[in-house]
Image (cartoon, rainbow, N blue to C red; front, side):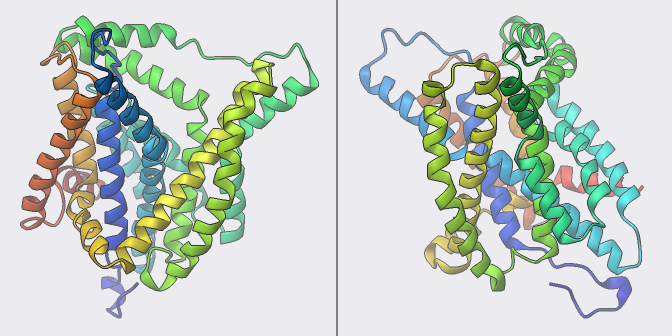
Length: 391
């Protein structure tokens, strides 16, 4: 994975499989965001709609969320940790400490995320910029403590604490963040506000609502755990072809764990009536279930890319899209806001039509990516982020 160049020139080669995974994740994210109307959730009345369209609406919604809901984001988070390892280790091989520079890089990501949040309240870059400091704090730890720390994060310690308190004390109630006023403000701006009103509300109430949702749904600890796992994957070279056999074990373990968790997730409400136990337990089981499915997707994509012939060429075609993952992620939020919010075209369409909008956005972005990577080494936002990192 490293070159036999002089120490000053040593660096990790770019891992195409990681770009395939990035491209897949961002493609899945745009499809989900399109059917959600980019957190607007405003759909036309379906009372007079044909049964066929009712069926396709439900099939598309349920199918996409089963396949990608909570999983595409998790792949994106896993790759964030992986990218940190590559950058950190490249500097280590040159005798430099990247940690302080990465803190500055996280601040820049915070700025980019807030620009993105002006248009789309469901963006994750601000969360990544805040949680990303866990990588700075843990990057010098050995593998085993890191694995244990990632496991603790995945087991949702806040949820476990809430469950233990609710079991021990029947009068215990979970303390919730009152984010309803924030969501009402963003919905009003999306449905009737001007462009400037949308920007003002999204950058404050929208971000508070998004971060509150992330905290109360276990995304903060899960993101930290995925960052650490991604760093471990990079440290041990698991995305390289010669380590593919390890992913067969990951796939087998994920399959064994997913189906019991899926079944348990569906039956919790039938057997637990205390909401102060049901809610945190549901978050814990659901997050573990989605984590297993995410690893099934990652394993399948890696096997498909490295060993599946024609499928390998199809997946390889995602590399240009993955190389511009940040540019694609940010611009799709701007496009979606323009298409569905009041300040823009304010399109009113059902789920079936909306998924085709997502496909169209992906196709246009993909064509532009193919054009761009033939002429430039980095995407526009990727280039600016890299240059600003080294100011």
